[in-house]
Length: 624
Ligand SMILES: Cc1cc2nc3c(=O)[nH]c(=O)nc-3n(C[C@H](O)[C@H](O)[C@H](O)COP(=O)(O)OP(=O)(O)OC[C@H]3O[C@@H](n4cnc5c(N)ncnc54)[C@H](O)[C@@H]3O)c2cc1C
Ligand SMILES: *[C@@H]1O[C@H](CO)[C@@H](O)[C@H](O)[C@H]1NC(C)=O
Ligand SMILES: *[C@@H]1O[C@H](CO)[C@@H](O)[C@H](O)[C@H]1NC(C)=O
Image (cartoon, rainbow, N blue to C red):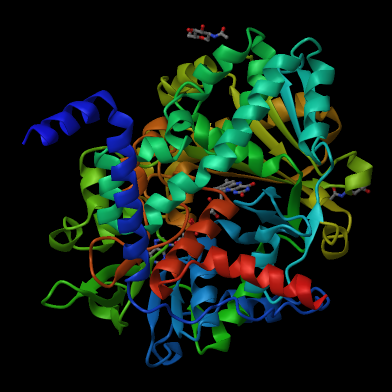
């Protein structure tokens, strides 16, 4: 017995050995769990299907046949393999990947056109994008570009924004200091920031180092969503996850905490934090890991879909149709259907008398987890999912809402002096304080205050085909974060029938936004031909968001810092037959939601599709 006691004492003196032994055990367990699962399905990315792009189709009827195919009983394909709720990029990408693996998929969209945040709308001779202003990682040669090429058979083309694609403006309207951001590579980026902040090289280098650390540790987050929950729980409960990845170390710090460590220069802090508007959480509450993910995304530049954002859905839908699938609009799903064993077996479109039930062995929701678990899945079934419990316990919830201003302008890009560039205009440099003070106000005082952050962009200047499609015209899209509470009372009123108070308040916000834009672009003052404001209630109506949120679930620190939450936000839901896709799995953004689609299809096909993508890239390189 003594020998055991000795070993025990030795082990307590050398805890590292125990940890190492246990790590080995877990590693073996995880690997075996990964390989002993169900047999993998077909590789959706086996063959390169990219073809030279055909000319842009501008004929509205031809486009509508693809993007606005209305829901009818007759159009429902037979023998479906899956039905997907929502036609955002998360739904479309999962559908296209499954269809490339031979599955027949039906995508159902509540709005009158497909695309979700990627849809565009035209009115009075102008076209506006609603939720796509710039996308990173789309340069030739990246894996994300290759993926999008495969989802669209190479038909979706991209146009680069200016090298200086974002400008940060800081100060009172009319007195802003401008900080352009140059992109292309880390070195170019660094030089452009350093030019404005000489003497801050150490801080900038450290920031870049942190970005790199987070980039390298991303797999720590993603693997928790892919491995079995049992394996993930072992890693979490033993604390081993913290040894395997630095991700949570960075996730557990706010952006402000990191920036306070790096520098005392308040303008520099603002310039390094400005992009939080892309995920909607002020730097005092945002996770540095999310911020790094976003900043990394854009370091090499930004692109815009040639022909406008509707090109995205327009070219993915034919890929879905190739395997017999369909994308149908005006198809509001009211409920997920279950059998007596508690397995999801389909969906109900519409309500009461006019309802149609559609059956499929798999239901995938791109409608966001809050919609899915609080209004589509009946509570008796929803409560079996860890995601439902997290919503009930307020561990996750809807993110920030926003107001969008759409302005049609008389004049071309050149005549109006516009650029393929966004301006992020802040009224001061303490971003957290600005945003929080603003959000804490009641509606009537908010409407009378300066708006602390406006995002100003000109989609027409980013799309080289705009001038052919809408000669002599330009458009501006302006966005400001807003509090859902200010608009909540109109949530159940019908569109266009919300009354004068609603119109007045919405317009007051819009006019204030435009006045702030004019301090940056005074030349636009007399060029306005069209002026419309979309409120958080409009987002609910057109984008199907639960509380006017523009980026799905809240992106606050806790979502990324808690390994438990990270693990539970995954495609499988604890409910047989029900999976989720889209921005709530990993993060918002076109790429974030697309990656949600990749994870979802990986789950459904029991294979790692990212690995398949890497394999495809190698094959293409070999044959060239
Ligand atoms: C104003 C704004 C600006 C943005 N700017 C950018 C940007 O510049 N770059 C970038 O990368 N990202 C941007 N984003 C974020 C990005 O667009 C989104 O994160 C991403 O497109 C979300 O994709 P998704 O598939 O998860 O969800 P969504 O696109 O929201 O799709 C969900 C779909 O489900 C549908 N739906 C909901 N409920 C039902 C139901 N019951 N039945 C049927 N259908 C239903 C909705 O109508 C919607 O079409 C922006 C978003 C907004 C709103
Ligand atoms: C647009 O501007 C042109 C030139 O400035 C002017 O001739 C024309 O009348 C304007 N159109 C509208 C609709 O205001
Ligand atoms: C920003 O404002 C907050 C709250 O008023 C304050 O605590 C913080 O120190 C300020 N930050 C800077 C950089 O001035």
